[in-house]
Every structure is written in structure tokens, then in C-alpha cells.
Length: 175
Image 1 (tube, rainbow, N blue to C red):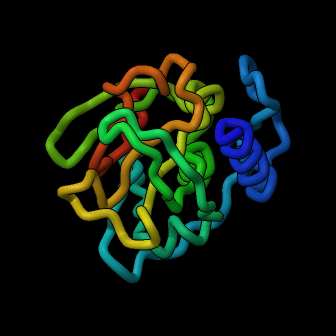
Image 2 (image 1 turned 135 degrees about the horizontal axis):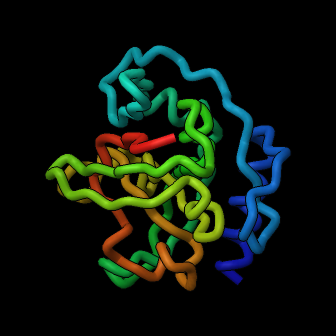
């Protein structure tokens, strides 16, 4: 039941973000959203998206304005369910002008890196977690933002190496 609820929350969040075009390979009807305006950060920048020298910076308020949802995630690191406030990662990418076919490098504060495209996030229902139990996420707990998945059967969701803690930067590798 929890998986169905998280899938529904993901699709609803994408709908609210103005999604219209269907990405190939998505099994739940998820689509790539239209870009939303990003507010100029007034607080600490928690995520930077870099595309050919153009930087889009997000603070917590800008991320929440993209349509944060309350979700429950079965976290494989702590072996329990977590209550999170999160934004679908595809909504964040679209707001920064990133498309589903862009090859991306995802970098954490400790310079840990993973590589995947935006389209891969749709099938695995990837989220950018901002809060846990209504509180901002401390760096010691993988914050200030971290990547989580609600589809644990997908190729990214089942691979714990893709659950990026303390995400700091996303870079477009090629177009």
C-alpha cells in the first residue's frame, strides 16, 4: 500500500508541476515537467545545477516552492521508513532547464559522484528530500538535501550507491 501511495504522490506532484510530455520507458505514466521559475535564493544555497557555465542555485525555500510533498520512504541505510518532505527530482531538473536525455553528474559534499540521465529518474520515482520529520536534514544525516527513491525495484532505487546523501551539485555532461 505504501508503494502505491508513493507512486500516486509522485504522479500527482508531476501533474501539479505542469507535466505534459511522456518520457519513454516510464511505466506509471510519469512525464517530464515544464520548467517553473526559480526564485533567487535568499537563504543558504543547498543545491547548484550547472549547465554549460550557467548556474541555477536553490535554497530550501526555492525547492519547497517547486511543490514539496510529504512522502514515506523505506530507507535501506537505516532499515526503517522515513517521513520526508521532498520534490520530484525531475521537477528540480526541469526548473534548471535540464531535459530527460541530458547526461548528468551528481556530486555530494564529499565529492562522491554518480552518473545517470534525467529520464532514468522517472521510472525509479526519484525525489530530492529537504526535510525529515518536518525538520531540515542535518549534514550528519545526509543533508541538507539528499536523493531518495520510492521505487525500490527500479535500477536506481534498488542500488544503494545511487541514494546520494548530501547532494551538492548536478552537472550536465553533454547535450
